[in-house]
Length: 542
Image (tube, rainbow, N blue to C red; front, side, top):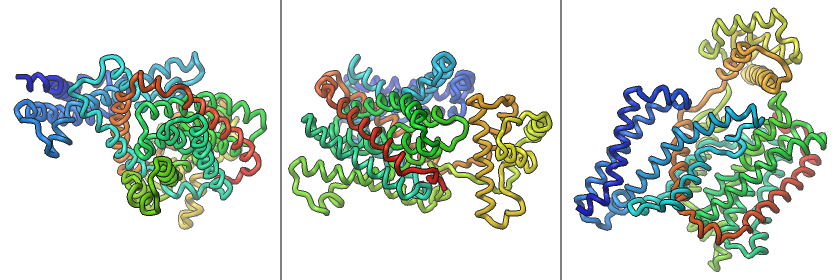
């Protein structure tokens, strides 16, 4: 009877998931899902809930009648099952309810605040997952039945890092000038070594210093998650690092555009500075658009610089593995660091990164599985109603505020009914693609100018242009699938890590990590500002 009682939480969660899955399958949740904009995930919700619910019930029944053992089945499945199901339930609630609600609330408050809280505070599944874990462990505590499952968090996070490799390729480097590659590399390595030096000055634990150096130097949360196992960082140290990155980024998001305007930076220069000095992707994008919302050149440059830092992640992992081994008193050799100690999951990241770069998942020029296809295709045309809307708008002079290139792009869109190159150039693939992409950029500039209220366009006209641009943006189904897995791995792992962050572990760290992060962040932002003005000209994009 005691065994049945111990398995009762898992049985209840399993039954609850089955009930939810059946209700979702009936269509009763469709109105709520439409309000939350999660209706496209209803099939996934049904599938996940029914599968996880059945596994939970089956596992709990086996545990209630089977004597605990030390086999692989017991260690890796039966014992941690309750905790795994609990974290999955929390991840589902966050992904399907908490995160969408944050977006809706943020959208409703935007007219009052002037910005979206969701993006500024980065209140996505990453932060919400950590907060959920922290709240649970510091209020009710981790339930006894869930403790073994919580320990799986780090392993699942490593799986997420492996999936991350499929979202990037070497093609992004082709869009950077020589100076730009050196600039990104210099500030990535420089910031890492600066934080390591500060950690020694302030006598901080090696694990704290190592994970903070990666987070501040490379690519924020992703680098923090990837490096933590290498330097044996605690959950509280990861939380400090992520909190420092997001807080510093919020300040930079407001300060950078003002300084850029006062200094007379060009769009390309500011994009390079924002992409180098601000770590969080959403905050980089917000700062770039705040500086220049009329066209997307600044945003493109900023994101390219931001993306490129990811390419340095394996190098930084190797550097920190060497540093941590040396600081721990281990005798190191090339074999020790590269072969014996190099994290297997980073090798997995590199394998997917390489496969992505050679075009295994989508065209090698892609970014995160997204690529542009401006070839002629009936499926990429605007609808007849949209064509009439644009044609009438041209006749009525609604596009009088556009630049000559923007007006030419709209005129060609009406002529061809889609974004594409010149029909007579279709035999010259390079020229055809170049012209089509240039027109797409001009149309995106029109939408940006309308959003910034630089020009006035009707809602129907904006909708037609937006649809035309959207049609040439393609997504690799393989990369989308791998990304979905990555998101769920991260959601699970970060909730589990949050459960390991107690009040005691937070108070023990003190305020030095934040001080170190602020010093490193200000130093990088200041130096990169002057270096960008000196080196970067309007030649970054090909």
